[in-house]
Image 1 (spheres, rainbow, N blue to C red):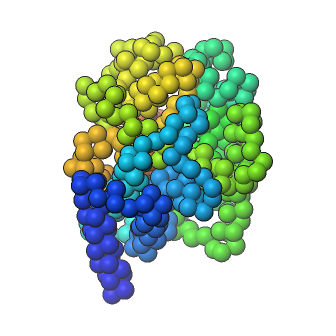
Image 2 (cartoon, rainbow, N blue to C red):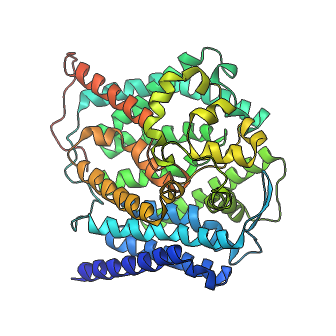
Length: 475
C-alpha cells in the first residue's frame, strides 16, 4: 500500500515537473526568474527526483545510480554556485567566455527537463517490477569461469604495461596530448598490447557473466579496479567512481548485497580520498594547484562541467555546421566510418577527423578552439544536447525511449548470460550518459559480443576436465 502511494505520488511529481519545465523551454517563461532562483528551483527539483527514485526503485538499482550521476554531472557545479563564490557564467578555460544570460537560463531548465521525463518513463515502463535483485540469474558455468579467469590473468600484464606507458606519456606531455597521438608513438608493438588489453577485458566480462560465488569474484573486482586507476592518469578520471558504482550495482543485483552504516562510512572516506587524489593529479597536470579551494569542491567543479558544455552549445548552435545525420546517430555509423577511414581515425584528433565524424564533442571543441582540439583537448558531450537538436519533442521522445530500453535491459538480465557479459559496457555507459553520447559504443559492444559467442561456441566443443557446478551462483 505504501509502495503504491509512493509510486502514485512519484508519477504525479514527475508528470507535473516535466510539464512545467517542457512548457518553460517552449515558451521561454524561465526568463521571468532570476538566475540564482531558477538554479535553486531546478537543483531542488532534480535532487527530489533522486530521493524519490531511491524510494521506488531501491538504492542499488541502475535507475537510481543513473539519477545520482545525472544530478552530479548536471547540477553539481550549479548547486555549489549557490553556496560558494563561483560564477558559472564566466569561464576562463580554453577561451575566456561570458555566456549569454538567456542561454544560461535555458541551459538550467534544459538540464532539468530530461530527468523528469526519464523517471516518468522508468515508472511507466517498469510494470511495477523492481530489478534491484536479479533472483533468476544463470547458473554458474565453471568451464566459462575458468576460461575467463585464464584470459584475465594472461591479459593483465599487457593491460598494465600499456596503461603505465600511456600514463607516463600523459603525465610528461599533458593528458590532452594522448588524444592527438597514436598508440604506436607511445609503445612499441601497439597491436600486441592492444590485443592483450582486449583479452584482459574479455576475461573480466566472462567472469561477470558466470556470476560465481561472491568470495570468488571479489578479488577480480579489486584487481580490475586497481589496474583501471592507472587509466585515470591519462585523463579518464571517471573510472575512479564508475567501477565502484558498477560494483555496487552488480553485487546488489546478483547477490542482494546491501551496505551497512559502517560500510557506507568507509566507502565515503575512500571516495573522498580518491577525490583528493584525482584533484591533485588534475592540478599537477594543469600546473596550477589551487590551495584555497577544498578538494571536494574543486573536483565537483572540474568534473561536473556538462553545464558548461550545454552553454557552449547554446551560445554557438546557430554557427555550428549542420550534421548530415543527427549527432545522436553518429555512434551508429562510426563502425562503418572506422572501417573506411581506419588509418585517419587512428591518428588522433585532426581536421580530417572533424570532417569525417559528425560527433558533437569533436565539432563543438574544434569550433570553439581549433588549437585546443588539435593538441588533443575536448569539451566533452552530453546526450541531452544530442536529444535537444530535435527540440523539446526530441528530448521527450528520446528520453522515454531511453527509459524503456533501460527497463527492457534490466528485465533481460535474469535470463540472458550475454546481457550480463555486456553489463560493464552498458551500465557504465548509462552512468556516464550526462557526459557522453546517447548511443553506447556500438563498435566495442559488437566486438565483445562476437568474441563471447566464439568463446561459448568453442567452450561447448572442447572437452576439459572441469566439473560444472549445479547450484545457483549467488548466495
